[in-house]
Image 1 (cartoon, one colour):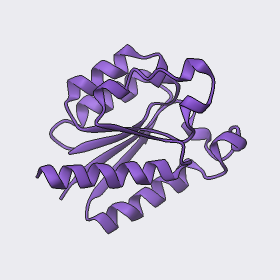
Image 2 (image 1 turned 90 degrees about the horizontal axis):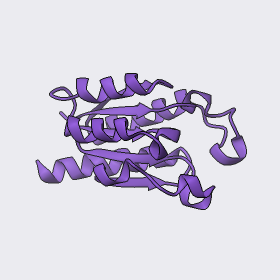
Image 3 (image 1 turned 45 degrees about the vertical axis):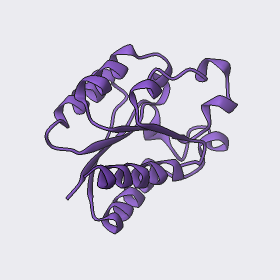
Image 4 (image 1 turned 180 degrees about the vertical axis):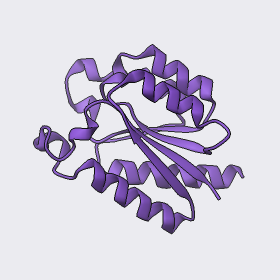
Length: 147
């Protein structure tokens, strides 16, 4: 059975209350609950982790090796700034889908460049919290096809 890690980066603990005009009113707990329900439908399991600390996210990526088959990752603002997170994704060697609730390309110019995209198998952005579900579905489909 496929096991997927869903990582949430900085500020995502505030989903539902932080800038709801951009990020909506759905909470991180709701995202995790919806992701768990979809995982059950897809015949896989998930684990979730949120941290505002870059090192915790990096450690989680490496600890997932040998235990998880892939990663759905919303690195938040670290997307645009963290070579260390980028290198951890590459180093962990797990298929990773980059996720964003908002569309970074429709926002400030500093959000247009992703250090994560080049080491991810794909990016899903701009569909609100549905982006997580789309990413999970895409990752599980990709992993199933590749066997």
